[in-house]
Image (cartoon, rainbow, N blue to C red; front, side, top):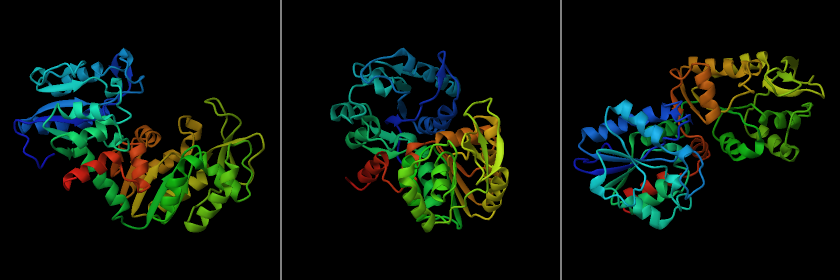
Length: 383
């Protein structure tokens, strides 16, 4: 976008304004603040702007006030100091009725959005001279507002936020400084198996945390008490451990229930009792991982080590976060739980890049082509 002549042009910008709203008020404005520089640049170049975004998961084709972007429009107005016109019946509005900055109502109110409906995509495209894709967090979805519109718009391009995400991922994955450590947490191996297999061929150290760890411990013959693990994936875990260095913990933090009041007990890795659940990595293991982090050139972080929402089971994730914050190499963190941990432990300013996309981040790390990016590349070469 920044390399184009925008003077007098009408831009349709796909932003990620999917923010939490309680009682009609935005409670976290990080994504709104992130798109402000894109808007200000376009305005300074003499363009008029139509923004569009999804919000939550309403029933497609139905208006639902709980998912209206009206609070977002109000927040944009206060940040920009300019009117932001919320366009509800945008198909019926003439182009000349749009203001200098407009925001289309939630795209998921439009029938055919998720199916990448051709007629809906063409209707979006007819609104603009240039379509700007600046929502990395939705780039893994082939929806009408992320993919289809880019096919039919007179011109389609990447916005500054999307470019920043792609450059950061390329630095971490395509031209990394070695050695590389990837930290992967999650509840199930099955949900992250493709990611783990991909990373096993790319990184030097693969740290496993969260519920995923239980299956890897079980694969070594260690009792995991009443912790959930995936017995059918034990062979996959063993295979991964032959392909890449996976440092397993020597101590664990266990509890008898997953609750805020549950007592945390530190045990050696082979002393978990039958009535206990593994809810965090132990302090000795966390300190060892922190020492390894200091030796790495690149860190890729996706997922906490324990149930960090509860203080007594968040110590290892805190140790990890602080170590990454002090790391002198390149670090990239992505995914909802990871960003929540980054914010909780106050290391956001120390991490090289924080990705706004959860699913898009994971698919990029797995080497998958993102539909919202692929179509821009195709258009750029005349496709």
